[in-house]
Structure formats: structure tokens, C-alpha cells
Image (cartoon, rainbow over all chains, first blue to last red; front, side):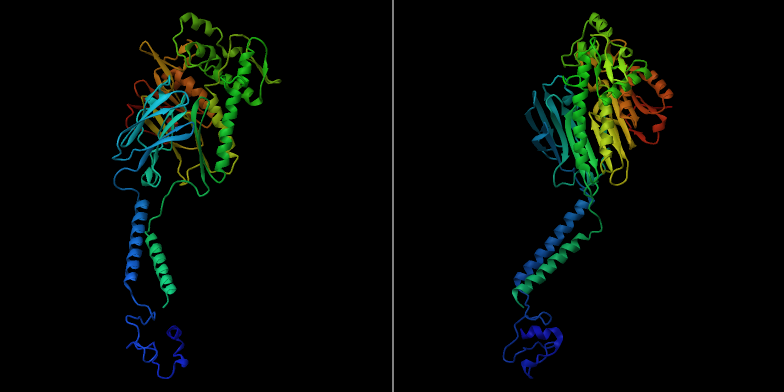
Length: 188
Length: 353
């Protein structure tokens, strides 16, 4: 406690006695109290602080965290520069999501049977695209829409109240921030 | 120094490191929405799929009000809903006039005005013809010529009797019936825009079954980009229109059709022939601030075919169009030269007055 008080540059503590050397001297490190050796590795700036192995680990962790944050933030700001965005195909029936599949680069092909409110459909997905490959509806508009490959595109089966949409996967940069989408809406 | 002091120093260093790592010099562009919010609703109504996206402080309330308005409109305008005002008029055909709401009265009158402007190419009394072809209930069939002739005797918009004082509509012939399918979605988009604008919002983007309306500007101040679908390939588009405060409404045979005996029969009827229109156009897109006009004219100009449509555009200047012909040629109003950008795949682009 006395060392702390001395560090406030209030001058030597008169209660310590006349034999105490002022701790503000540069060299050498001496004990405030005669007869008691100063602790090894004590810093003269933060008295009593000794750099221990645990401190080294904490420092490494902090720098690692800073580095990871820097990398993560610069990646998000600049957008994904290599490879395709993480895309997903989402199928809803009457507004409720019933299926979601990864269609980003390298995703394996999938085929999923769906029961709509009035019939059956099949959704097919591959890396980079998805489509309604079969439906027993009379107009077949959903099937005729063909492959969807960009975020925002959709295929709709009216009689079955089914909508297949391509979305950017949650947590990915998607196409909005990495490049400007070509259009906002389609008149058809 | 005690443990708590050590921990404090560590925390300070960690916070410092985190803050420093955030200063990369580039900003996070999370999305194009305004700070106040965006609300998107997608739903099924009027026999199609609709999406409404609103930006602004009151976005959520505005979008909800818009959805309710469309559902309410469907309840009063749909021929397939027995309790609708249109069904009431059709049920009393040949019997007595039916009093309707001011809104419905006004819409039916507008429809008849467009019939007059287009010499009957757009005609809401076409309903009996749609019935015999199966476009009403989905049981598609090719009717005999005698059936077509019989149905055509009930098709003539000039026979609708209006009472402006009593707000009633009378179909004098028991076989007559009206269908507002060719104008209702356009009208609905006008109603929706009006409602959304009455809230504290900055912009909105609406698609009622592909009938697009946009107003305001996006968060970054740029105009909305509306793509026009390629009638020959639904995956693609033929061009992009950069505009706002406008409706962009497209009609084409590719939207609804059936095939029988190797022949394709589209849902757009030619009222004179009583059968699907045989047009040299694949699609017509009307660009106008008036959605009701856009809906009616997109159907009418499709039936007219390329030359008559171009002539109509020359003599009526309150709208612009983009036509896609059967050869893939784009015919574009010259007023759109600066705002419409065709994609490279168009065979040829012709600008007309």
C-alpha cells in the first residue's frame, strides 16, 4: 500500500522513515522497506506488477481477437471477392417455410417432394440454382419458370400456394453488399 | 498490484484492440434500407402472387393497410366470389339494375371508357367467352364455333346501362356477364399506392402478380430499376427501366395458356373473334402513372398487334410502351430512350413516337 501512495508522486511517505529511498529514482530498484527485497520483475511504473506467463497468453488472445475482427470486418465491407455468395433456396406453402436448402458453390444436388394445398410438386436444387421440376397443377407456370439462380428470384405455383425463392443465406454477405443487383423488381 | 487492477488493465487493452480493429477506413454497407425501416408483405390475392415493399418510418403499418385493401377489393370485385358486387350485377343480368359502391361504379365506368378508346378491343363483357374456353374455372377446352357465336351475342360493352344518380349498373341481357380481371389489378395498385402514401413513408415497390408500381427513391437516392420479363424465356429480361412514380404493367400470352392438339390457346381474348387473340406480339408493357390505364391498355394493345398498337401510341401520348414482337424485336416509345435500357439479347430495337 505504501508503494502505491508513493507512486502518486506525492513524494516519499514521511511515515516510512528517513532511510527510505524515493521509488521515483530510475536506478536502481530498491525496496521501500529496508530488509525486504523488491519482488523480482517488479515494474517501476506499475509497482508490484510482474509480467507472468498468463499475461502473455492474454496478450496473444487480444491480438488474435483484434486480427480476427479486422479480417472479418474488412471482408464484410469489401464483400466476398472470391467465389459465389452463400445462396439458399427456400420453399413456402401459404406463407409458411417448409424447406430450405443450400445452393451455394459445391452444394450437392437435392430433390424434395412437396405437398401444396391442392396437389404435389417437386423442387430440385443444385449448386447455384433451384427450380420446381414437377407439379400436378393445370397451368404448369411454376415449372415453366425454370431455373432460378439469383437472390430475389422466385417461382410461384398459385393453385398450391407454393413459392420457391432464392435468398442470401443468413450471415453471408449475399449479393446485395458484394455487388449491385441488376434490378429491383420484374414486370411480367 | 492486486488482481482486480490487472484485470482492469487487460480489459482496457482488449477494448482498445477491438476499437482499433474497427477502424478499417471502409464502412459497413449492410443494406439499402433507411434507418427507419422496411416492411415487406407477400401474399396470394386476385388469383395471383403479390409482394408489397415499403420503406419509411411507418412502413409496417402502411404495408399492412395495403394488404388489407387488396383483400377487401378482391371481395368486392371478384366474379368468383358469390358475395361480391360484380357477382351481384351478373346474377341480376336481364332482371334488374344493381346498386353498387361509388368505387366499383367508377371502376366499371372507367373500363367502359377504355373500351370506347380502343374500339372495343378491351371489353369487360367478354366473360361468357372466357367461360366457354374454360379460363374461368381452369377446365380448358376448345369450344365449337356455334358455342363461340352464341357467346358473342352477349358481348358488347355498349349495352351496359349506367345510372349515375342511383349508382346502379344493369346488364340488360340474361346471358351477359362482366369480368374485371383485365383492369382490377391495375386499379388495386393505384389504391395501394394512395394508401401507402398516406403514411409516413419514403418509397415503395409493389408487384401485384407482375403488375409493378414504384414511387419514391431508394435509400441511396437512386431510382428503382424495373426489369421487363422476356416473354420467350421467363429466366431472363429484355431490358431495365430506371424510373419512379410509375406503374409498369405487362401483358403477354405466356402468362396463362393451354395447349390442345398441338395448338396453344392464350388467355387474352379477342372480343371480335370470341377466341384467343392471334397477335404478332409476345408481350406489351405499358409505362404510366395510372395503373388502371396500364392494365387495360396492356391487354388492348396486345390484341391490336404491332402496327395498330404503335398507331394508338402515336395518337395517345399519356403513356409509353415496350412491345416485344414474335420475332423478338423491341418496339419502344422514344420517350423512354433515356430511361429504358434494352439488354444485349434483343434482336432489334425500334424507337417510335
